[in-house]
Structure formats: C-alpha cells, structure tokens
Length: 264
Image (cartoon, rainbow, N blue to C red; front, side, top):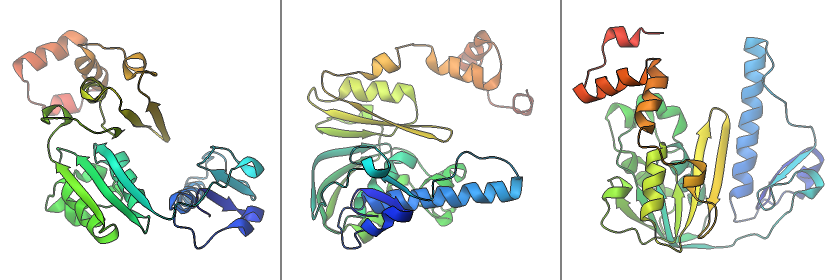
C-alpha cells in the first residue's frame, strides 16, 4: 500500500512503507482479509462466493478508481481533528475511530456518542473489542476509550454515553453517523447545526454504504421518507405477523415468548 491505495501484483512496486496516512494500509488489510475469507468459504463449502481480486489490482480512496486510474494522493504527515463527532460506536463508528487512530500523529478532539453496551452477537463486528468486554459486560465507549488511549494518546476524547437526541447541544460541524435505525438518522439530521456535514454509514449484508449529506444537499428524509409507523412495520416484517398484531403487542407491552420465537 501507499498513503491512499491498496496495491496488488505489479502495482505493489509503488508501495510506500514510510507514509503516515493509514488509509491505504487499512484498505490493503481489508482486501487481503476478504480474499482469504472467500477462499476459505470456497474450500469448505465448495461454492462460488463472488469474484476474487485480479492478480494485478490497485484501488484508491482518493478517487475511488482502480488499476492505472487509481490516484495516489498526497501523504498526510499529521492530522488535527476539529469539530468532529462519531454518533454510534458499533461496527461503523468504532471502525472509523480505529482507522483514525492508526495515524501516528493524530491530535485534536473527537466526540464519541454511544448509549449502548456490548452484545455477544456483535462481537465479531467491533474492531477494538474482546470477548472479555462482552462477558463483563462493558459499555461500548469504555473499550474504545482504552484502545484510543493506547494508540492515539494525543487525541482528546469527549464522551457522551447517551443517545444523540438527549444531548443538551449538538455543536459539531462534521458528523460520522453510524447509528443502526432510520429513526436515529432522522433525529440526528433534525438536531444538527445548519452548516454541518453528515457522513451517513450503513451496512446491508456484505454491502457497506457511505452517503455524504452536505448542507443544502441531498437529505436523509429523501432517502428515508418519514413514516411514524416505521418501527412497528419493521417488527411486523421481522416477526411475520400482521401490522395490527404488532400494534396490539406494543400497546400491551407483550413479552417475547417461546411461541413467538418458533413462529415461521
């Protein structure tokens, strides 16, 4: 890799082992892990799991192009964060903080906003988390703080162990929105300062999407039209029952039972 590119095969001669920007090396590591994983699946399941990377391949995070069109970009010898907040410190949020902390000379202030505890089902998705963190159990912020203190000691952290909508103010100019519900995305956009830029992250199976919501640009309400019944519609779809049934369960605060779990 170099500062911004993952380099495979004949492109690897362009590698820069002394660059400070960690994006290229993070990309290279992810692509390598994906290729290993595909081959393990193919060997154990004897199935086709997508396309393997070409023998000669380059990918750039500068212009998001491949091969000879993959732009090298300039190195970033130091990085000082200003008005930045990560909202949601699960898979996307902790990954963003993890890669940022890979920069050897990162400083400034980063706000972390996360109300939740670790769950065993999500352990494999959190880069800075161990099995002990889940067993204790620990708050998501606590393990991320430990990691950042070791690898980015010059980075000052501003911690908020509450949901975004419960904060007294929302002064940040750049937000990494990594929450996991549409309702939480609506809440963030409603309360953000007018000039802020939102980097909205989302996971759909093996697809990871990033949408930049600029001031005066494409809003999340266009992508996710407001629907006051969205949550119960999603639950109805998940449980495979009519919408009125979910409304009744919600109104009576019905406890999940064995019959519900065994339903098709």
